[in-house]
Length: 301
Image (tube, rainbow, N blue to C red; front, side):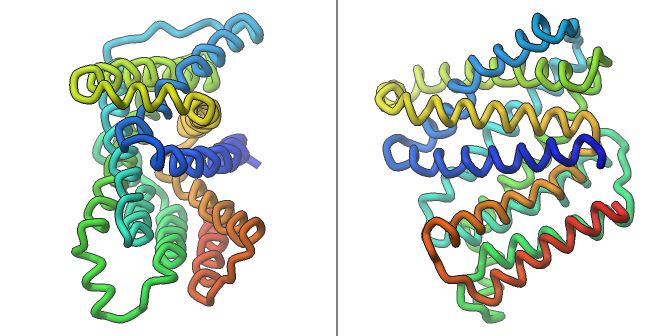
């Protein structure tokens, strides 16, 4: 088994935990604050990752270059925008529909990978991406009445457009982070990923903190009052991001994001196991398609 596969699965599991915690934070603070905690409270852990690799494992810290900084800025801004839009979807009644469209991220990452890096995704990977995207969308809209009228209405709904925009920005950020990490040229994928993560989170923390100081200082107080939950979000968020960056240093962003759809299986399983919710045939079909897509990705991707 290639190393990027277990790294991606672990990152998807951690991201599932982070998303659940962020959804809770949305009830005690605004969208900006819930977005910020992912970065601001993740910064100390990003620093620890680099220090552990430098002094624990003895890896040299790569020297940033202009190309690296440029891709970090692009990826950092795109991820802030994507996270903001995704959290904003929590405010909509048809949140599930919007989330489904945000999950088109792997397909969009394939397009941006071709445009920005000239990376061509193989036919098997493209088939796997398509299967997993359809599977995720089925799960996300499983409780929406299925009809041609509702399907058309969902395509042009505000939440769908926000979801698509979120997926676009996540696709851009994934490709940008892969480009940034590869531009360092060494010493190995772990230190490249950790360095990319540190510079990215540092930039994101600074820009969001400046924004809140300028536009919404009250949000800083709400964040401070929820520091325990925010610290948890920072830990699992930074750990998940380290996993994404490491996996995308080893493999194309679109392929990593396709396997990352397994996060929906984690979410779905925990909902059924912990909350004892019943499942319908559409959800079962969606899960089956995600599993089928992952199998295709492993066999011929």
